[in-house]
Image 1 (tube, rainbow, N blue to C red):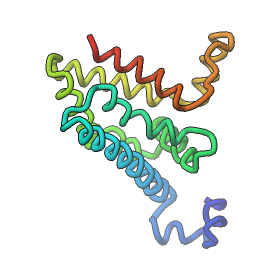
Image 2: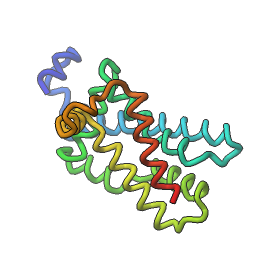
Image 3: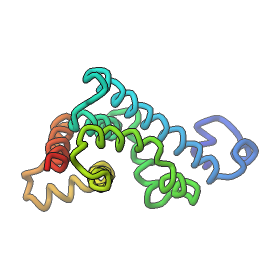
Length: 179
């Protein structure tokens, strides 16, 4: 908190004055960045709907879900720290952050609806489960996991660039919706 208030050029007591507590400040940061990320995803999904007369293919729906957090995670991206913070909040966030992650699924509903429309032959329950597994791809796509995979593969899986990683993720996830 001292680093944050020093960077902002304000008194440490101002956190409590304006936010009520350190946890409340952290939640506001989390909420702002998660909302920004989800707006970017929604814009991409909307653009896919426009390109395909309201019926985007599975791959483009998944790209709208995957691409923004991958872009944010790339080294040098100004949102890289924000993405690390959001990921860390899943495991170590405040009670309010965990509550939001658990129950605020409105941003995911549009992806579920689009996937159900793209695969009307699948039972909605199946689509929801597959979406859940796709979210696991996003949540485990972070540098520490890539280092682990690279070690496991004996150096065969070094992540060279974000677009190549996105293609691999899309290939895998799209295959999960084809059958």
